[in-house]
Length: 590
Image (cartoon, rainbow, N blue to C red; front, side):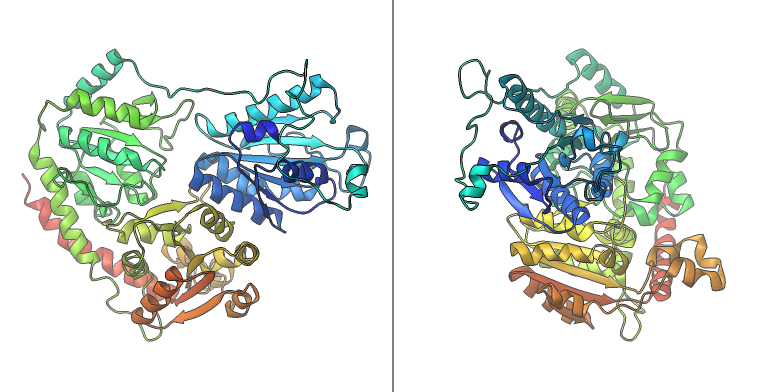
């Protein structure tokens, strides 16, 4: 625990278990860690993941041996692919009980395979100075590896032999004084070695000569675009505006890029494009917008239309900025991969290019006109809503103005994140978080509650009914820890995204195999966890319920009922209106 804490660990999420008792007692005795109790290991791991994403620092999760440890895997996968610093602590049986049929004993060595950056099966604990130094160094190393370049999960497997509780603790009736960091551990006495290892790291940067050459390459591109996918660095915004402004390139900002917010004074003319998902669906528009070069940062964008746009224009050089050894290029169309810290590279490029002038001012103007035209159409979303149902695409335009700038929005996968991409215009300082590493529907409630535990302002989660059901037991964290979360539950009774896919054309097979209606009423479950339930029947009621939830304490769930077939039809009608509006814009261009 001293090693982990010395490496920056402040939070430990745990589930009860017998074999993990010594680890939990050590964490309690340490005194410098905040302990978060959970009951279900899968939920606990996603809770820790949400905290790690918000804090951008290692968060540990502890489980006992057996299938308890296996339940961490979904969150481990998400942490790996979304680059979150998660530390997995799994208690284990001693070696003599492995592979001999002992109860609650599975093979936990390398349990998570390639999904962790580093895995260690520690030796059984003993009081020797050498082993104490090893434990201390391993903890420091685990915390450092979890948070550095790029971040990700690490696994410490901890074999423990009975007795699991010190005799003096039993005699004291469980009374343990907290705040005894380092007592009796490595670094506490002559010959035992130093304390926690201080790990110092630097950000990878390109040398001046390489930056100058890259700046010259970008300057030679007349019609380029900057594409920013999901990423967490809000401080990237201003230097990126400087760079795009110097080049005369538009910025295509993913909803999880932290860039869909008000531009600072002096940068209002830089095209910040948020409606590309709608107008790039139009073949004539995507063809007319053929770029001469593409600078890419962050993970792969949410938008399928944008990803196809990147894939189709193979003739244009594409510079992908990533941290070594990352390689975020799913379509394998990159011509250059730049291993460098993104913000520092963008700052250097902006400085190198600031004395120039945009090569083709008309290029940026075309993107601005398409943005304005498309935004005007999308603003009319919701026309044609049926009796008793609401258009899912209108959720975010209604929700985001209610959130203060210190708010956090957690968005679910499948349709919610896609609707956020289409309908979120920006103009707010709200931070946006999502699990787009593996893009699963599991663990979203727990991720949001973990985020709420670490975020100082109000937090909202927008999620579909299947995702909500999948992680319903995650709501217990709100009750246990008095957390504040407003959930917007889009209830279309099934898998709404499949109504947009070819499976929807399979007639009688569609509903039982992909639509999967459940007919669930979530109100009693929310009440069981001490939450407040509101069914919004119109947008006025929605606004009132959400505003009360954001301003209040505890858990509030606001249900928005939707019809899957009608929702798909409304989306398609809206895309058709966008196509009719933007075709004349590109037709007017020479």
